[in-house]
Amino acid sequence: MAASRKLPSVDTALLVPLRGKRLAVGLSGGIDSVVLLHVLCALQPQFRYRLSAVHVNHGISPNARGWEKFCSVFCRDLEVPLTIRKIKVVKQRKGLEAAARDARREALSKLSVDAIALAHHLDDQAETVLLNLLRGAGIEGASGMAAQSRLGKKLLLRPLLCVTRAEITAYAAEHQLGWVEDESNRDTALTRNFLRREVGPVLESRFPRWRESLARAARHLAKERGEPTRQFRKFLESRGLKAPSESRLAEMLKQAAAGRGAIKHDGVTLRFYRGKVFSGKEKKPSRFKPKTWNGESRLSLPDLGGELRFKRVRGQGIDAQLKPLQVRLRSGGERLKLDARRTHRTLKNLFQEAGIPPWERERLPLLYRGEELVWAPGLGVDVKFLAASRADGLMPEWNAF
Image (cartoon, rainbow, N blue to C red; front, side, top):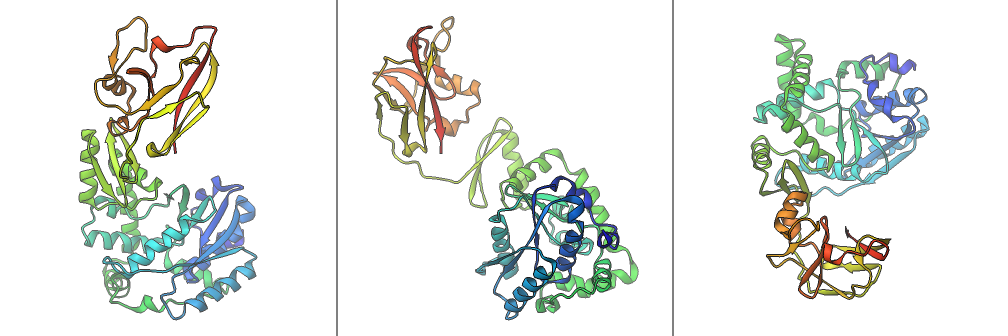
């Protein structure tokens, strides 16, 4: 508790939902992450989360082994479990920093925890906003980093986002904490270091609170962003996908508004239909040959990416005597009668009413008796082939893998 009072701006509201949950701190060994782990260790009895730390060894610096050893000793002294992840960073066109960041996020995403806490603070936020603005990132970039977001299914928390670098340094001195220094932080050839070491002091001479002002502006902009943009960003984030550029985002939202089309992003294909977004990896469809069903409770259809399951029910589903049946795909013009009081209707119209996306319809397994359509996934059984009210029936269900 004493530790938390030395950093009054720590966002403890982020910790309230973590009772009994697994919380890992990203520990680089630098002063920011050291202070964050120390603070969260002190707050653990109050918020009752299960605390651990994770150190990602990029192997880039010649001092990487020393940083790893420091983190091990620090966690041992705090009696906090430590996980060490060694990663291989492959330099790409976007640069070594970006490649290391991507590899680090990939390593963090594989942790068996509920939430991950990162040590970004107010100065980092201000520098991020300024850097994004200079790069022309638009409103999204000017909104900076979120205090709470997601990395796949995990919560991503930044409890120090309103804490200044000066406060962190003072806290470390007060508690006599050691830390390691990354020699690359002195390299002003790196853009962020240039802003921090060259531009920041000049701004401070004229605008002493420029960091707080930029961070406050970022919070306001985050609230003012349009709902479609916010929701779409959240959708991408929830699936662990990278944030697109402003122009790319505009194109995605245009496609979404039109309710049609597909766009490739970060290794997946995003499709839009009736105001909803669907994501999946692009796969070349396997050729499907008609398959016979002879009454099995399960019929595997790997070429379609799933299996048919049949549940025995009374007075519902397909007449249990109707076998064998054949599994085929659409060829066009199929009709189904789902209500005895209505005429046959085309699958196209029925699929549209059911809200089944067009790209899924062509790969759905249909059950036929001869040339007559018996059943279609998401729609039901043709009345002609329904089980009698007191007879045994089989209810099909399509389960995609």
